[in-house]
Amino acid sequence: MKKTPITVAHGDGIGPEIMDATLKILNAAGAPLEITTIEVGQKLFERGVMTGIEPASIEAIRATGVLLKAPIFTPSGGGYKSLNVTIRKLMSLYANVRPCQSYHPYIEALHKNMDLVVVRENEEDLYAGIEHRQTQGVVQALKLISRPGCERIIRYAFEYARANGRKKVTCMVKDNIMKMVDGLFYQVFEEISADYPDIQKDRYIIDIGAARIASRPQDFDVIVTENLYGDIISDIAAEVTGSVGLGISANIGEQCAMFEAMHGTAPDIAGRGIANPSGLLLGAIMMLTHCGHGKAAETVHNAWFKTIEDGIHTGDIYREGTSRQRVGTAEFTDAVIARLGKKPTEMKAVSYPDGKGGIKIPALKPVVQAKKEWIGLDVFIEYNGKADDLAEKVKPALASGLELSILTNRGVKCWPKGSSGTFCTDHWCARVLGKADTAKLVETLQKLEKAGVTVVKNENLYSFDGKDGFTAAAG
Ligand code: NAI
Image (cartoon, rainbow, N blue to C red; front, side):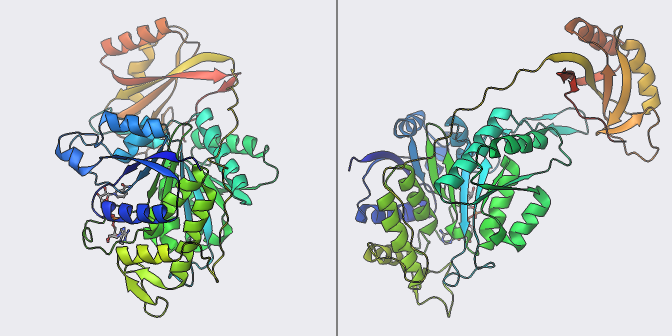
């Protein structure tokens, strides 16, 4: 079989130990891979490379389209960037896929029969890190959600479910509160799910959804959600399997994919030869199926199941009573190699076809172009004082045809007729309604400045096909 070129990064801490173990097993299984090794992480940070990766290594990843990566140390503070986030963004790895399975009774788990996959959007949401300090007392983070971004991840979740014989996709959002951004995610979920009548669909508000993952994870199959929620629930899901050390994280894009273990560099046990290589090995198995080497993936996965079933466990999962032999990284590796070609007898053996390759999603639908009209302004103001006084300053400064509708503070209406109990910060919003244009905006901003009103930002208000493209204030 033709060898598939991949890029490998050995990482920091226990990274080199678990990567060596993983590659030894893949090699023994005859996985047809042609490996290019790159240096990333700590050594690069020490040489002053703030991103932790050289441009030539980025090109190597691009050229192979597949990266198998051991964990990397991220320095705290300073201008250092998280290398994981850098790679995700540079390669547009839009889907983060985290299978979370319990291996009861061989590995102690809180829940005995859970087997779910979190499909997390990887590029948008609050993770874009667009933050501003606007006043002395208020900072903001922008949550941007796009229709194509939603469609891509939701389609990926359904295609993943289909390709992996999964029965149900559950959407988790908070659209009762974030009616527009989370509302869009759910609306797109509703639209896209109609194209997959063979897959059941389900929906949870994220808070109760997260609680249910902790209490009844067996109710879930594939979960699709936004970036931040996905970050949180995938850790909850991994934790309740009883073995964060076995968690996998695959980051999938159209041109590139990165596979890794969920855990970090485990500096407390680095260099001691006791690290569990299973998380990275399971990531490598996902990589093999992604590359179309299903049979090699199947051989390694079944050998791993058999090793676990035989009670040969590294210290992190070793338990008196259930485990038979406590082993280090090297012995565990040899035990898996000795079982290549064998299948588990109690746990379910897996079977992956050759040549299937990664999941391809259909072309995205073009965004429908609605009639967009500029119908007002949200003018954000830094101000300490009473709402009534601010209203009297703002009203005369508005260009003709514009009218002050309400003043809000952190989204709560304070004028007209605000509640005396509302706690106000120095960050106000004057909602101004009326047909607007650039000239009126400039005139208003100039007049506000002359009146001594400090504008910190402006948000244009639009209607789309006659429907307001903004939310109402609370109260
Ligand atoms: P960690 O996951 O490295 O360690 C947490 C605990 O789990 C430690 O007690 C460790 O010994 C244990 N552990 C983790 N993996 C294990 C394994 N394979 N076998 C046996 N025991 C294992 O988390 P921590 O300490 O918060 O982070 C350490 C470093 O790793 C930080 O610099 C962090 O930025 C980095 N990190 C990197 C990640 C990546 O590259 N994907 C992900 C998470 C953290």
